[in-house]
Image (cartoon, rainbow, N blue to C red):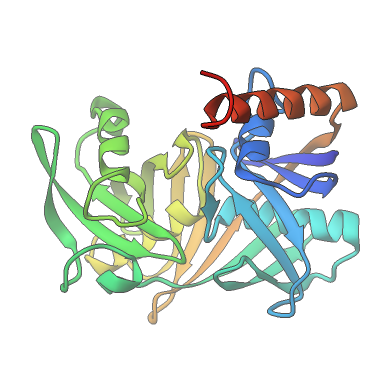
Length: 291
């Protein structure tokens, strides 16, 4: 099994170059930072007629994401560097088609249109959630539900973000009953009409230093509620800065860097050990084996 490890502002993914077809169990094992390679997800290429290239975006918990801005930029960088892709092409993620552009170190992804229609996010209810009160533990938070190919819940606050218990609120919102497919969660503070800082609780991954789709969700939510102006918006995160252009029709363009870390060749003994351990665990859970 060979992989390329890259990161976008600290949000790191493993691109599967060759080896086993991914399963949730394989992904969990590879992404483990203590006993595996370590990563915030796996990008698995596949053949498709829906676009020039196809990629399955795995979260570290073994679930599949509809879209990832950082993941798509990393995949685009890999396609150009390692597979000879042209500077512009499309990628099918299994749920949506995105356009990618690579110009030297500059990478941009056309992320499609943001939606606030509840069924399209998805979120329960018939009316868009725009600063709607959501009960989170003992608090009631104003939330904005927005879809950018995957679901997002944005909470704007005026206080310094790190003074908030956002790491406690994040998982509660991710798994809230209002969101049937769970949700990514962002806590945001507007710095000026074209600049916002955010903290991220990513669905299936937890606290994340940077996220492309989260940046898109926050920028769109800010424009929709009048907190931010349409155009090119600077999104500041612990991992660094991304830029999101929000057009009048809420179509989104994401720009930001990618850093290639290196190639990883997984040792055959690790693969064998994992396979044996996985079979043993499966047998112990079987009604015909174990206790």
